[in-house]
Length: 176
Image (cartoon, rainbow, N blue to C red; front, top):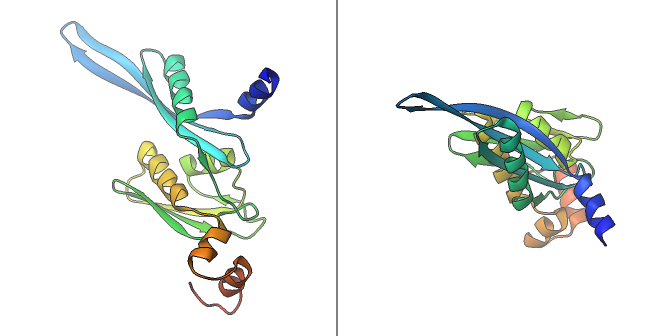
C-alpha cells in the first residue's frame, strides 16, 4: 500500500509561478520575507495551487506545495481540450478560455500556460483581460476550471445527449 501512495505522490509535479520578496519596516530597518505562488499537477487531469509565505524561499515553496494538495481540482476534458468556452473571474482579472482543435497547442500567457501543462490540457486558447497580476490570473483560471463540467453532464442539463450536443456545436454553425 505504501508503495502505491509513494508512486502517486511522485506523480505530482510542482512548479513555482512567482516568488515575491516582501519587506516589513521595523525600528531597526527592514525585515524581508518571501511569498511563493506554486502550482502542482499530475499532467493528466488533477491540478492545484497554493501560496506559501516564509522567511526563506525554499520554505515558502514547500508551504505553497502543501497548500496545492488541499486545493486539488479535477479537470473535465474532451480529448486534450476543455469541453466548452468559459470565463474565469477573480477581482479585476478575467481569463477567457476556448477549446481548441487537436494539434493547435497551448496558446496562453505565462501563468496560464504553466497550469495547462501541469493539468494535462494540450490544446486550448486563453486570453487574459484586466490585471496581469500572476496571483489573480491563477485564481481566475481556477475559477473558470471550477465552472467546467463533463460534456455528458452539460448535455444532460439541457435535455439532450452528448452526441446531439457535439453535432449541434460542430455542425451547422449553430450556437448553444
